[in-house]
Image (cartoon, rainbow, N blue to C red; front, side, top):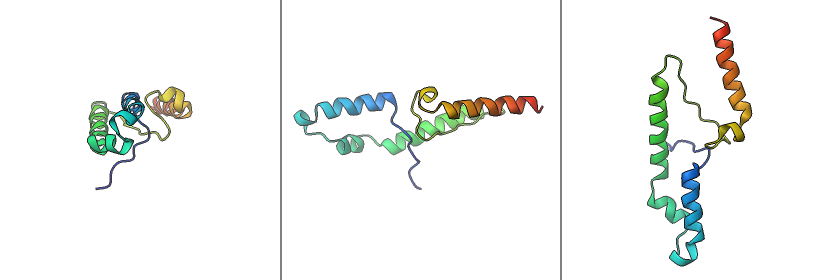
Length: 95
């Protein structure tokens, strides 16, 4: 199975990467070594699975992965947020 697409690092992981990069000369640690120390793809797949489970708790829930968006999707991709709101409003109006 192919690894799922990872659109952006979470702020927590980005902070860890920054910390590792800042100490790379001391510990001779590279980003590749950091990523190999953590199974990033497996962690991301688990993260997606948890969000899929949460979406299933609602009769109309969806888990959308938006390219170019990180934790602050409203700042990163406001167009996607507005499109999602419009879809909800449109669905409510057609009932």
